[in-house]
Amino acid sequence: MRSEGRRAPDVTVRVLDPKVSADTVNGYLDTLADVVPAITDFFNPATTTRIRLVVDPGYTDGPAATGGGVITVSAAYARSHPRDLDVVTHEVTHLIQGYSPGTYADWWHWVEGVADYARYRFGRDNAAAGWSITHYERGSALTDGYRATARFLAWAVAVGGDGIVQDLDTTLRNGTYTDKFWAARTGDDIAALWSRYVRASVKGWRPV
Image (cartoon, rainbow, N blue to C red; front, side, top):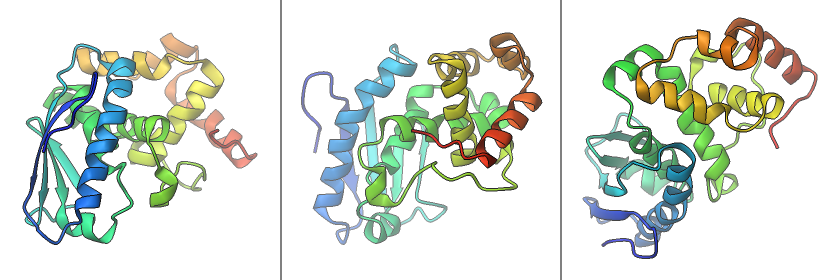
């Protein structure tokens, strides 16, 4: 199967478990066709839009993973969470990021936080999967990655204006990121920003 449509990504799909619903697989395709152009334009217009999607019963390390131009979705996860179609929104963001392995090793919390921020911003139906970054979890840390870091990024945009996540993404892709980025970009270092974010969250701030 291949997705079709203007500016849609070229997606080749392999489903290695016949028990996975065709509706779920088609939902992944529809989601990719919808979100890839938007995420590409937002982060990295030069990226490729050729994607291999594999639904694999042999992958058991989590819901999904990305590497070498391939998005692998756990077949068990696809069967048990058929409404979580935006799992591919997070994963395709990693393809669009195009970061080096060294960047992932050094700054994995930003890598995963940016991907979950993309899911928050561009996901088609996060509510259907029960996924959100609405609630602040006391004791969470910036380096937790994923939703914790994505929620901080949403706050940084709310107080600092649109563009900050794209600028962060660019430095990560170029391999030039250090935590000095935040002081140069906002006037506050990352520790001060996190403290401001926690105080705002405790007082009731929530992403829109």
